[in-house]
Image (tube, rainbow, N blue to C red):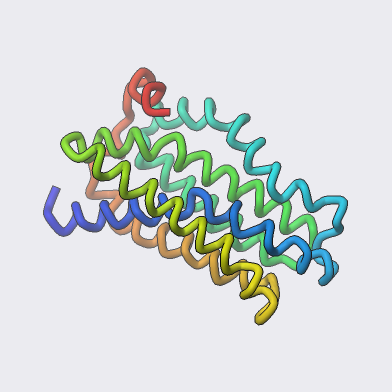
Length: 199
């Protein structure tokens, strides 16, 4: 792989990692504002945080099998697309849009959690520790920023604009990933054993 493609791949891994907690952690500070604005009834507020966990439990084995069949790079492209779709659906000003968008976000998060480790082992076999540390740091740091600032931002611009602002991170990640995807060997399927070990 050419040097510029390597750096683009590193950036793609960083940005996908940055999205693996943010769609969840930014939501609890927004719940009161969403309820007050009439977008989300209080009786449904718990689903905003429980749906991503349910998606992870249900879809992890499925995504592992898809990664084994089609390759982690290809499936990660769909996972990143699911994050973008989820971010967009959350902007629909009703409970259904918010909850369905949360389900797609949970699907995208699950794809990243399951397949990023496999991708790193395949693409960066001599830098596994460094790359793993990088994306997990991005994951935790951006998640903390989302938790700490989403409530304050929502008071200034409203919950919908706040979700759009943080959702832009998923759009950037998808654009970067599409830029490096076709130059990487990870589009080739892995063995089921390799994906299972990485999950």
